[in-house]
Length: 440
Image 1: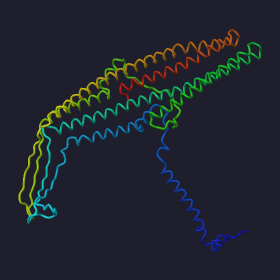
Image 2 (image 1 turned 90 degrees about the horizontal axis):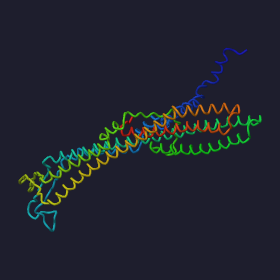
Image 3 (image 1 turned 90 degrees about the vertical axis):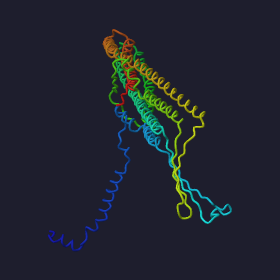
Image 4 (image 1 turned 30 degrees about the vertical axis):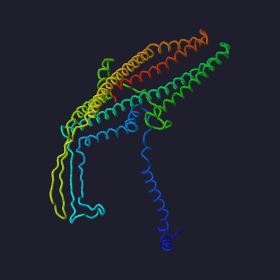
């Protein structure tokens, strides 16, 4: 039997057992510490959710990560930064002049003392020119900001349309898969009837041929889905082969206008139109500024003359520009007026383009919505009833296999037509929302 004093005896023989374990503990602690640092050092994109599951994830990604919007943000800030310098005074001019220098030895004076002239000049634009220049720069900055809003609308509309195509391709493949599964069941049914001597062998073969044809269409739909994914990634500002989440439920794009006239009532408030209007106002301000340039600016200056080590005299200067180049001024005024006319014409052209886009999008949306409603409320129930009737009749031998196959194709074809109509409705809604101004 072991003595109770054996542990104490062992401790006396090995007085430092814990120190032998410290290297192992140190290695474990170092590994845990390094793992924690590595986890903190992982890039933020590693935990960033992949877009594509919902339409809201697509909108959020566009507004936060699209490089075109980031570039326009910088351009907007740059335009705002030009406002203050546009109305600032020009930098003053300082000069130093030496007189009485020896031509042979310029570093020496010809007489006993050297004469030094100091001068400081500042030009002052008069007649409100600085305020007009600041106003024109502010209007240009407003135009750039409105361009950014227009780009955001267009990108969101393109993203919604691309996501609708991406979702549609996924749904179309799902419809074809259901149709292929039903054909397999019909093929098994035809095989059983053939084994019982109640149907011809060609019924099962015809079902196989139909499945092969659908497999070909499925391959085409999968290629369409890959193209839609590449287009969606391009709008998102990602690599074309970047992974996308599987789309969830059908996207919902609400149109708030009750009629086309209501949708086009706010066309003149579209940011693209307002941007051109701001540029026209900037051009009009520039016209006034060019007219004010007929009046001369003044330059004030102060100076002092140093003779030896003391100031000999001081001076005060006033300079006035002479408006001698009248032809050049008239041409600049003419240029500003032409630019104003061009900006106004471009505003009208932009307004007409916005109205045309709105009318076309409204027509696409309403026709697709009516087509989808007709398919869902009338065609699908009729095709389903036809399929159920044909299936029951085929099981008892009242109709041939061709009738059953035709009923199946009509039923599933109507479901695919419903998905196509919903895609067209979503595309039209996305375009209408871009006119309405629905960003979120």
